[in-house]
Amino acid sequence: MQIYPWLKPVWKKLKANLERQHIPGALLIQAKQGLAPEALINSYVSGLMCQNDASEPCGFCHSCDLLKSESHPDVHFLLPEKDKKHLSVDQIRGANKWALESSQFGRYRVIVIPTADRMNTSAANALLKTLEEPPSHCLFLLSTENTKLLLPTIRSRCEVWHVPQPSEQVCLDWVNQTLEQSISPRIAYLCQFEPVTTLEFVEKGWDTDFHGLVEAFSQFMNSDGLETGELWTLITKSSADIDRQLSWLWMLLSAAQKQALGINMQPLLPESEMLTQRYGYELLFRQTQALQELSEQLRSAGGLNTELLFTNWLYGFDPA
Image (cartoon, rainbow, N blue to C red; front, top):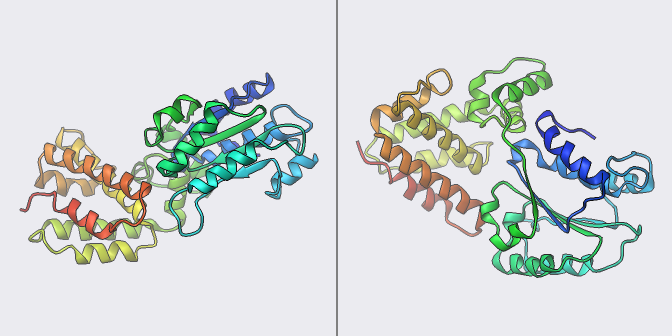
């Protein structure tokens, strides 16, 4: 099972815990999706459930075969239902009931919640009741990009593991080796040095989408600051989802802030110069924070008028 270079320090410690049978009732992994936390989760679950090894999958026992076919009766993944953003309270209640059942292999039962921050309030409270008194030989394995989006009481009942951001060099080395070609450091910077995100950016040819977004964004800034339709149309037609595009704008604004403070960002994001020349640091900082809040709001809540919220954010820029 593949463990990426940037995951190895965390995996080494988790593996050691498995070997000495230190298994918490609830384990929380905090990592950006672009760092492939699912690889860490799969390795941990496989090591825990293997019938022949204490910390790594042997690859040929019955448990390993079932995990590979995603049909292990003692391992359950909770994901939002189709066309839903959130885990429902019924899904959590079902998991709580399942957690009390006996293991079919006489070992652990594992409930994996890969997007733990996507629980609504009722679902989170239902999970909390079980975490307060977790059943024996049952592990709740949660992951999230931002632990602050979870109830503090849920965080406090989990053993928390943070996957740190890899260095620029680690990111570039892995992507270059995977693609068997050298990519520009600016792409890795734009993807916040998340290796999997950077690889996806290159493979899907999103450089064109990014430049189109920046050009439309610049045109809006140079207009009367009222007509947002053209920019929004471009965003909706892009092959990259809106969350991805908002992250590009966030990086652009962050680079503009650094440029305003005298840090030369030309080699990495020369497009940020137009923002620095037009706006002061305080407004750039305020709009960057507002964009972060908008992104979190869109990820955590469904049924929102995304175009209206994005337009309101755009109007936060002072007109020329």
